[in-house]
Length: 292
Image (cartoon, rainbow, N blue to C red; front, side, top):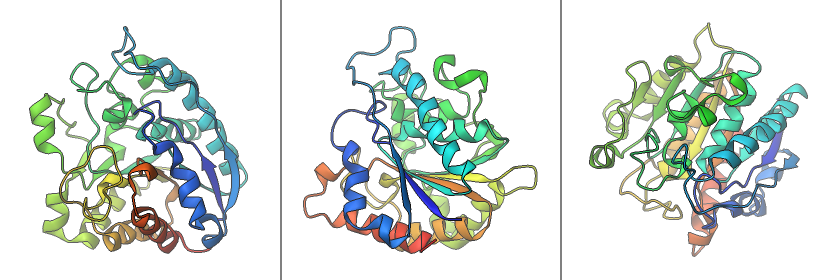
């Protein structure tokens, strides 16, 4: 399918630190031209508010709930045109819009590639940022305002999601994060290293490419990458995937024939002093996607 790029520079789930510049930076490196992608749309986002919502304890909860259906509309329009949506964030809360678009169409899986599991409940989140809890919200764990968008929650069933490459188990314990549901497939970085990248990716992809699903969507948080090559993220941790490992996972996902879209979040150009992280991320995406 031809690629269509949706610019979704939301900061609602994080803070106005620079992640909103992700789309223009990757596009400036020639991403659209390299994969022969059409620039489909760019979404404006509501003003950022610094206080937690008193009912949900989530920053900008109502704005996220109102904005996510707009992103879902944009993703759905691209899919209706027979194109493959490539959503450039923004922060990780964009996954709610992308998965809402899919829930409107059927039952889809989610391959969630992230350095963090993003499964905090609002009261345990140290920040109140939706980017701490976006996988939890997408799978129906959290306040109804954000888990039951359009009355369609959960947007992704626990058993239809895989969280891949995360390495924040110690932080989860320290802050009292709720445990991952047993039905949700978890492949942490330790498991990736034990199995090898190809075997780990194959296992994850097979889980979201089951016959009872209509396809799967891929979420990529730039902090899944090794901090040594991707320091341009707001919450840094040692370790992570190498460039070639992320490209391997994405290439295998696309080659499966079941992948219906992809989003990229959290890369912060303001923290990319020499531009190498942005160029590397562009190379990985162009290498995995290839010309449409």
